Amino acid sequence: MSTKSVVNYFLHIVANRFSRSSCVCKSYQKENEMSAEQEKFVIQAVIEDWAKALGDMDAKRVLSHLTDDLVEFSLAPPLQFQGKNADNLQNWFDTWVGPIGNKSRDAKITCSENVAFARSLVRMMGTKASGEKVDLWFRQTLGLIRINGTWKICHTHESVPFYMDGSFKAAIDLKP
Image 1 (cartoon, one colour):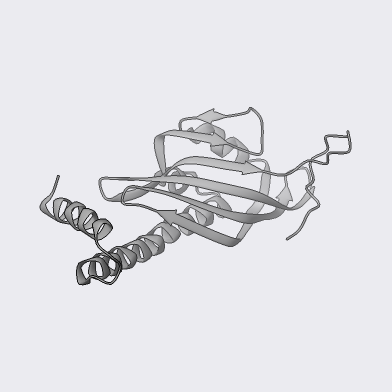
Image 2: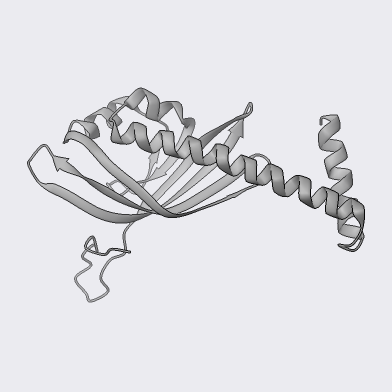
C-alpha cells in the first residue's frame, strides 16, 4: 500500500470518528470529493471514446477500452458473451451500412478508487445492410475497473423492457 493510500485510509478512519465540523473531516471530505469528480471526467472520456469507436465501427479502438475477461449482456443473443472477440464485433459491424449513431442521455457515474459503474439511456440509429432503418432507445449499465491506472470496461449490460401483455414483445418503440 502506498504512503498516500495509508494516509488516506488513516484520514478516513479519523474523519468517520469525529464530527463533520472537524478540520480533518472537512479536509478529507473535500479532497475525496475533488478526486471522485476528477475520476468521473476521466471515466466519461473513456466511455465517450468507446461509444464513438462503436459508432465509427472501429473494432480495434472498441476493444482497447475492454478488459480481456469482459462479460457482456447485450441486446443480441445469447444471454451473455465472455471475453473480447474482434471477429464477433466485426461481424456485427458488417450488418450495418455507414456509421452507427449512438447518443446517451441521463448518464450517471458512480466511482471509488478502482471500481466504477455508469448508467444511461442510449439511442442507437442507423441503417442495416438489409436496408432496415434502426432507431431505438435502450438502457445501458457499464462496469469499469482501473488496471494499472487506466479505466477499462469489464461489464456491459444493455436491455429494453418488454410488454407485459402476454406478447413478450420487446418495447423498442419507447422514448424518454
